[in-house]
Amino acid sequence: MNRGMAMLAAAGTVPLFVDRTVMAMVDPEDIKRTQQASGRDGKILVIVQLSGGNDGLNTVVPYTDDQYYRSRPSLGKPANQVHKLNDFVGLHPNLTPLKSLFDAGEMTLLQGVGYPNPNRSHFRSMDIWQTAIPEEERTSSGWVGRYFDNTCRGNDPRQAPDATVGVSMGESAPLAMQGEYVKTLAFEKAENFRYQGQSVGNYLKLNQPEEMPDPAATTATPRPVARPRPGQKIITPATTEGDQIEFLSRTAMDAQLASDRIRAAVGNHNPKAQYPQGEFGQGLKTVAAMIRGELPTRVYYVQLGGFDTHANQQGRHDQLMQQLAQGVGAFWEDLKEQKLAQRVMMMTFSEFGRRVAQNASGGTDHGAAAPMFLFGQRLNHSELGAVVGKHPSLTDLDAGDLKYAIDFRSVYASLLQDWLETPSKPILGKQFPTAKLVKG
Image (cartoon, rainbow, N blue to C red; front, side):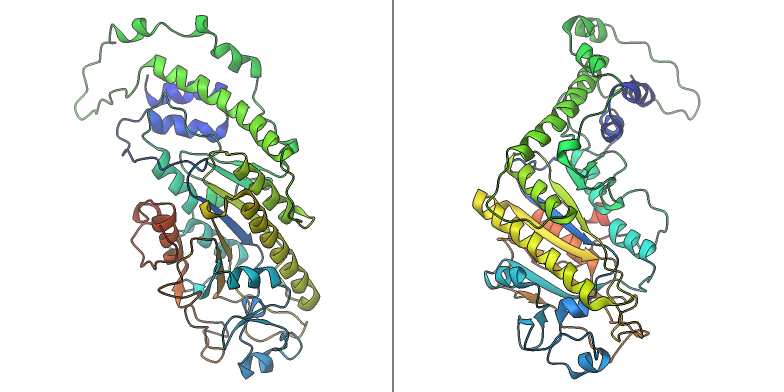
């Protein structure tokens, strides 16, 4: 059975998030890669997206720089209120739980993160961060999706891949999580998540022995191969029809069971940690529940929006900082209670920072470089310390914006290689310099 027939069979019997996996499984020319241990017993990455362009200067405050206060006469955070990380920068006053993680050696601050020729459009800059390919404006896959493609392709089709290799909290999966072959799950609330197939009965029927073809009948007598035309390339099937039907039936049933298992994991989770109300806090609570439930998920994706603070930024940004800190703080408290924190790494990012000077509306406009946070118990502070990179100059600017010093793709490369234990070059397109940010 060739790729086209496999795809045709998949269209009516399996959900969209596995149909491209079927294509990968039956293409004999796919480069086989070794699948890493699943999230059930291996390392897990949690990505937190701060949507709208978080104001990095009021998140990580250069409290000893007079230029900061001159540029922000009403928005600047008083030096005696920030949580000091060193002699130059400190955290926003509402980030108390993050300061506790920093003091425990469980947080790394990366300063001045960005990319060359920054784009100040929300949509384009977010695409750049999510695809990690600034040079291409139309890209159908994201960097995490390509990670899935590179680590899930080439497996034995009789061993159905985990349908929940990636989970996004929200109505749809972000571009970062979209691959060419492997599809991820996305839902807002676990209690409302159901596997929706055209007919569950069809999936059950596929598993009945009488519906399965006789393996001897499909393998004993090979089909004749037509004589190739000049220049035509014959692709030899990688698997038998019996293998593929078994793959499809198992995958369909796995999808059905995945939704049941996710809802069961969340329903059985009653942590002592107090998560904040709202989609962000409850999303992190759901992620912690799925980790506790030993789902095979490798990467989780959660979003906190509202950071486009062009006007009246003060109160709004303060509230967002509180939501971020309370959610992240509760999440790590929860994981420690479960004794699972050693297996999880968290990364935060935003599509860009804000301009140095506040505007006439009491807000800040679109900027460029901004800080990133990493959280986890296996961060490596022995070489670079807990604060990585020098804070960008507030006077040596790029058209009014902070200049970047750390390419965000180097951060991705470090996480891919040192945490997820996979080569970064096939995923990012080229080899970026890496730093030993995490312990293997």
